[in-house]
Length: 359
Ligand SMILES: Nc1nc2c(ncn2[C@@H]2O[C@H](COP(=O)(O)OP(=O)(O)OP(=O)(O)O)[C@@H](O)[C@H]2O)c(=O)[nH]1
Ligand SMILES: [Mg+2]
Image (cartoon, rainbow, N blue to C red):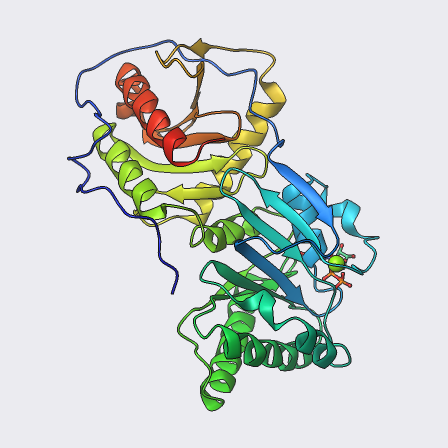
């Protein structure tokens, strides 16, 4: 299985980034004017050499692979994908700050799979490779599972521990009950078939996705975090940041895609994540109206802090680490009174993150 980078020693109270606890500080709140750029995302076509850290998007034709990646990486509106043309050659999207590349493959069906698999088994190799298999939940699931099985057979012949992430896509418009039934059915069939054939089902995960909400970003976040350099170190310092700044949750976001590369180890609530994404979007829209810049005392640049007060005692803070990354912190109203503490700890954390993931 993948190895993550070495972690810092620490239980959330001992760390090498020098966080402070406890003193109360009250600050004015405000919104930033810049939310970073998507400049770390680029797209190449052709038979370029494969990146070491890579995610492979595969699936039957019209399952939604290109739509998912266009919405995430190119900010395409979901409705604009309706006339999407079939993908004819492998396309690469790059997350420069982590060195992770995401590859969109042409659709694979029962006619193309044998030829396709036989010519490219090396794409599955490597410790930092992860497969995303997209299934159209409203399409021919049986054929899709047959194709999946043949891909997994080939992939595991060269990489037995390859993580397999199954996106059960196009679940928009389905009731929660139906979504659960479809997921359960697909899950049982995949596991049964893999176990029957002696394939490794230890690293299979299932996600319900649709391009019409943030489920695609949340799912991709969970996929890429296995590949992020020094993930354990990042998680340790985010745990520490959370506990010392009285935060409920913190995400390290890629600003361009709103995919998070790391989060603290507390459980991630999809609703919280979706709400956070919507907050970032809203901030981008209204940022020109109200702005506050906070000098974090770091020579490498000006840190921006955004604080949004929400109903129900929840407040969201966005702390910009550099032009690619932001920390999104979710806290209660009590922690919001500790703005200066957050600022101090935020600057330390941002510095540590910049060392781990230079932009
Ligand atoms: N309702 C719904 N439609 C979707 C969703 N995702 C993709 N689609 C639609 O599915 C169609 C095919 O999408 P593509 O992204 O071209 O599918 P693909 O898997 O890349 O297809 P190939 O390149 O041929 O392999 C488009 O009309 C999309 O609008 C989704 O989540 N919900
Ligand atoms: Mg496509």
